[in-house]
Image (tube, rainbow, N blue to C red; front, side, top):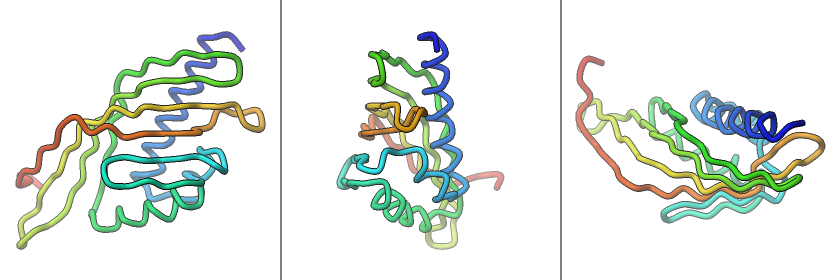
Length: 139
């Protein structure tokens, strides 16, 4: 594979992560991580693919989520890679009978590895740069 092909495969991996989270497809989500992967962010840390999947159950508090993956910079070094992926994550919920949308401006600090011939997430840190929580209109 060329460097460009590796970067395209890693970008597809991050898009599959967003899709699996938004669809609550936890078996697919587990396949995107190495068994010993780490996912952390403000106030949480999950160690291991199964712990990550179990931790995603907290998304049940939202009626829907939508992760929009934006630019990504990745440096490939053989069978490992490091990158930063920008994302806007929208979370829909209801409070006091009012539909609301909580948006997070995220920068994922990622470490990727080739595992069993496929790129996988070995470590992902969510850096939340900003949040916005507003009533949802037009729903």
